[in-house]
Amino acid sequence: MRLTSKGRYAVRAMLDLTFNSTGNPVRLQEISTRQAISLHYLEQLFRKLRTGKVVKSVRGPGGGYVLARSMDEISIKDVLDCVGENINPARDIVGVPSSGIEIMKDESGNDINGVVDTSEFHLTRGYFENLGNIMQEYLATTTLGDLMRKNREAAANNNANTTTNAFGSIIRNNIGEVNQ
Picture (tube, rainbow, N blue to C red):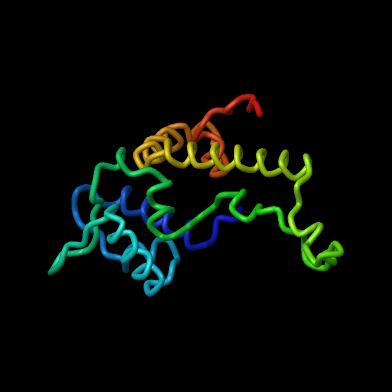
């Protein structure tokens, strides 16, 4: 359930591109300098983002990258999917015993406890599947445009002692109670 640096860097780079494009291509070297991300790493990420059709490359003098679609049509989930990020917390819950547990056999040699099939296992798996669904919905409904507008709001409120930590909490209001 970890978001790796690959996903975080891809989102940061896409936000940088969104903030600094103004309709003109942005060079990866500029993003690299502003975001302190290796140029080589950005090249790898943008190759995947181009394949995923969220950015387009522009060749020649003044070339670089531009968004392939409107900033309101590119979700954070799109970006993460393009770079192969999978943050589903239930993807590894399959019901096999943890390492170090001796698998007991019956008299025929069949595994007795080869698969965990308890109510606790099913409740845990269901809970994390629901969490994964909520995370996917959250990522799918937040676009680069949403974050751009939140950045503008935060910048406008910056005179009112808004700190950089406020960015994380102003993206979405509390989602409320989640029913199982």
